[in-house]
Amino acid sequence: MFLLLIAGSFASAEQSEAGDFISSQFSKSGICSNCHGNSFGEWDGSMHSNSDEDFFYQAMLQEYGAAAEAEGLPEGFCSRCHTPIGLVSGEIPPLDGSGLSEVAKEGVQCDFCHSVAESEGIGNAPYVLDPGDVKWGRRTDAQSPSHEVEAHEFYTQSEYCGMCHNIYHPANNLTLAATYTEWKESPYAAEGVQCQDCHMTPGIIEFEANPGKAASSGPERENVYTHYFVGGNAFVTDVLGEGRHEKRAIEYLQHAAALDVKAPEAAEPGEVVDIEVEIINSGAGHKIPSGVTEEREIWLELTATDADGKELYHSGALDEAGGIDPEATVYHTVFADSEGQPTLKAWEAESILYDNRISPKALVLENHSFVMPEGAANPISIKTVLHYRSAPQEHIDELFGGGTYTVPVIDMATYPETGASSQGIPEIGATGMLAIVFLAVAYRKFKG
Image (tube, rainbow, N blue to C red; front, side, top):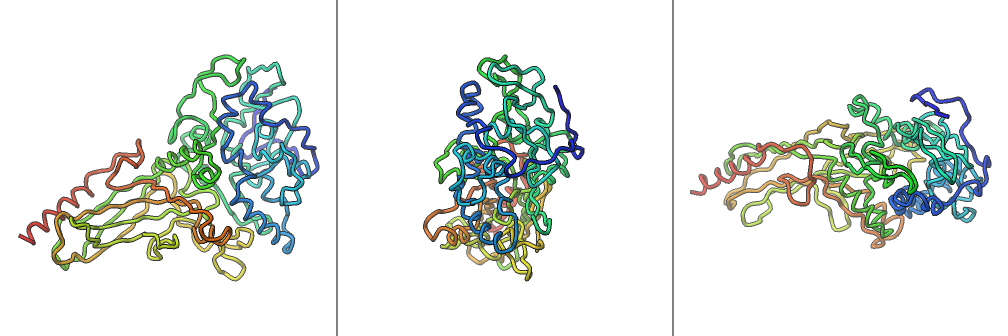
């Protein structure tokens, strides 16, 4: 049987709900590894495999649980995506995980994903499950000695990912995350590029075939989807000791953006030096940052120094507590609660104060300026770094106590480029570098 799902016109089955199944109807992922060792090895340690074990998520979940009880919100709202087997098996609530079976603790695991038979649409996990002997996938010619196989084109489409990667407030329907919609409205969607083409292949910013076998007993294939499901989380993966996945997250972040810098050709002491920085979303098929963007932060750090290392201008530095320079622009989403105050608790959100994130293939401009001082040593250097952080350090300290976790700051892009910056981002023009040279020449003239 081959079923075709078209985006926006899914079959009319009802989404799976709590109590529809029992957890013993689902197989643990270790069983799948007997034939699908490569896919299991890629998934193991990923954020999908740790979706319920994620300590940051768990801390926020417990806060949500207290609020849900007080405000009448659905207690299992977050669990629909983070421990779906636990949700449909009625093992959630309680939210402390005390009722979860071992298979439910595996989070977004093999048998759950391949038991999705249909979907009711996009957002808030409207999956329709059919656990049992039939495993669903993308291939019409697949055969297995262990189970039946049904093909579904849905597995090659972004709508599959969109089930969980759009989130709407359960009470007021406010958009809390919209990675799918950001892709849908992007040039990539118009070009036919799907989520799987970047997040389930060896390529980082474009599709790259992965030849091999999907199963040990299967035929050689021109392409087998990888199952790392890489995103930008180098924080939780680092703390959990998942180095492979941390490394891949950093690689993705360093291929997502590019910088270009323009500065005047010359300047005299006492003159205002204007610097224009372009921040380009050059590699992500969605906005940067994406996902739970009330937490995630991107910001630009710009430093101007003279030849003696004297700092002439600095924007975007972190203070001793890990706070971002309040004068710097932080690219993220800010939610407001019922009183119009900013909140990091998505369940309190009733409106969006602002959302200044960068759309796919779009750019934003930042303008910086400083007064050229007397006596600066040649040459003058201008350096810009685009930083990413999974969460504000202050929030992590509030949740876990100061000094427990340090949220890593990832350099997404630098200008001038260094060996630590990404490979394969669009080539940056020479204007900014020429500006640095001209500034140096100008100072030689003024000091001579």
